[in-house]
Length: 200
Image (cartoon, rainbow, N blue to C red):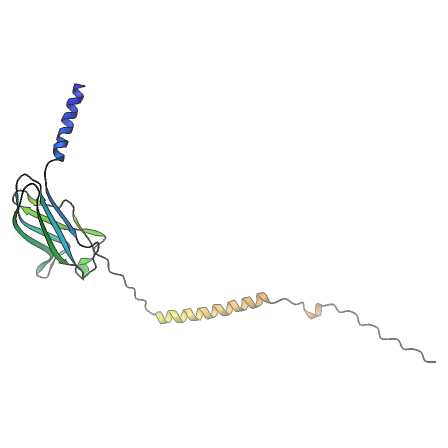
């Protein structure tokens, strides 16, 4: 019994301490469920310090899914300068970043993708969000061009006319009542000529 009590104390005490250990939290989310190419949006970031000491935040770096080097510069990234200390035991900093969704192929994503948000601090170094900021960009519609549509319509019209004529002939022949040939119809014999009466 004593061994069981000691074992449970060894196993459950660290878990209890780990559950109440204060942490440094970063949360990020966007203002819409889905964006279309060419839309604009806002990324919201909340930083909460539940540690026992204050934490100095230098900046927040953001990298969107369409981040790329275009000609002579980088696109799809942003840096928010904070340069402020977050008070201990529940201090909060709220930031937001406006972004445009590209109109070109860089905005094409499959399903939902992640916006990379990193918070740089003096005590902790780089901190990633507790919940990743997700973004969904609607796939542009696929347009199909049909070539030679006039030729197809001509063939279709001719086929409909031919089918209509064939169907009319079949219906006409099916509804006609058959007649027996005249040569095969038996005729009643002709009555004999009347007899002439004798004269006195």
